Image (cartoon, rainbow, N blue to C red; front, side):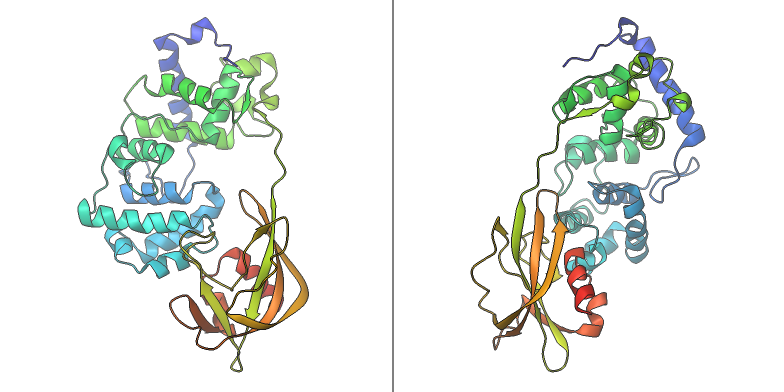
Length: 357
């Protein structure tokens, strides 16, 4: 549905006024974030890029400690590029969406080796790098290099929905919201990075999903949703579909010296490239009929791990088992039970370890 945009919001003067109000508010109320430059500092493209990759589908609160650990261990893009991938994956463990970590490492190597450690400063060049999509490339261009860009995340979508009182349901109207944001974003070129961060901060702290603080909003005098008294009812969302349910087995294989068998998952699997406990296939709607060839003498326990991924829920029965001979290699490793907490296991497998303790 087309937004009911008032005529007096269509002029360049009003778009300029929108930006002016946002920036004036931002100068007083901007969030302090570990990757964000202060007024006295210049943005560090390495920090901006690293934070943008980490923040994909992950909250600011969750990302903060990971970001701090990464820049402490790898202060520059060259340091990260030369780090073993296993180390990068280990530090990423628990952050989820592990393809991001593999692409992060690939991108660091390309920037280090092919760009002499300097990120390209345009959206058109940034988007060519691994793990950088439309949103990230615009965000990095604006925040790291102050280039005009249309940076639209969930916070910005919410501001646009309410400012224009857009009645359509998300995610169907994402394209429309991006166009509405773009009209204002491309209006001026000054302080592009600050403007992008100001809109995101406004959505995160004032124009919140529930109980928006309209009385504190710098845009309240022109916000159509506030004028109509429907700000708290927007944005509308389509009902969520029930997640598919997948089932399988996870194997607790130990030896006489209390070592536990771990398996490195394939690059194209869920949790790809990570060390984890061996599992069976994950089958939609039913348990697998067979166990993998590398385990024997299986004994089911009355323990089930449930873990939610973005697109499905997973149920794994815990099974104790023995290993077949000569299985150690690139994929299989033994680790003493006492060192499992240091292995950088994904959250799914940490749940199993916790239960088995």
